[in-house]
Image (cartoon, rainbow, N blue to C red; front, side):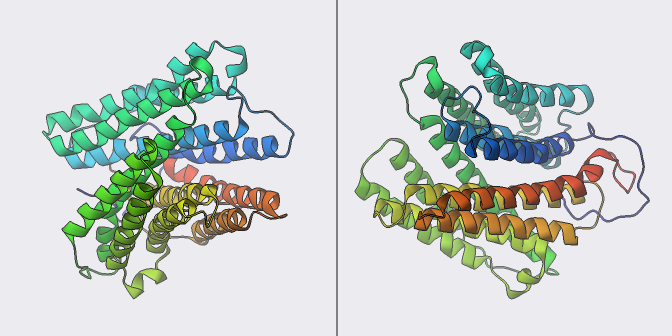
Length: 399
């Protein structure tokens, strides 16, 4: 059920244009560019040189675009590629893929120019992408009769659509909700990472270390996912501090045990592995910080940034690098630029979380430094992987 990422280089590169050959190509490129452009915009807003478009609250705009802009682009590239592999049935390519990418781009454009557009138009255009993506993966999943994957991934995309809709209602179409769409999206992405990590991290570790065999604990996987789901529901519906503390603690312990079960000393010598394991470690830490926040030991923002910068940022960057190499026919490995990108993003997460914990006079500086390190990481990604994403596979195969 995992992506086939072990294709080997067998031929010389071609100069032809292949951006629309498979879903990961345009959406990883768009995601990388969005990570850079959106963070530059956020820095200019934070430093007082620009104002936030559409969403009156700059922090709300920042959250929305990094979740429904950057993150959704990466999810689209991953799912369109993975579903093709899982089912053996094509997902959109060429003109349909181009149109799908244009819908995503239109969402970013209307958000950026939303001050001069009717709010309902902005809502409709921006919300349209996720249902179309759900349809694009539902067709091959139905043809292959992969009903569990259909239920999980189309269901998650449906809930993400709801989260985006709620975020627009938060903005001002109804003005009856406060941050519920952003909070729902954060938990949905967290659940998606937890589910996918359970599928791919042990597999990548075993194959990347020459066929070692890790112990699997299906009961622990189920407990970790259920505990995280329970914590999400308690938080979303404000079911009480005691329930939040109990479920945050259970989610932290179960995911920590899960992460420990995947460990092997050799993986820390392989950057394409340790970036993913560190990403999952940040997810575990974000649950710990959630517990500590409910005990009033750390600010709540620490939990959010441990997940979004650490877990989400490092997992998406690591997976984009890996999928881009594997599905362009290259041998999986990290160049110096790729390793530097991983290290910069790790430092961005550390700076942002440490700054949030102490929240002293250097808090503003920690935001600027973290954002700058994020920018460096994704500029390096775009520099190294844009040619890989644009050019055909080096082995001459389609995709």
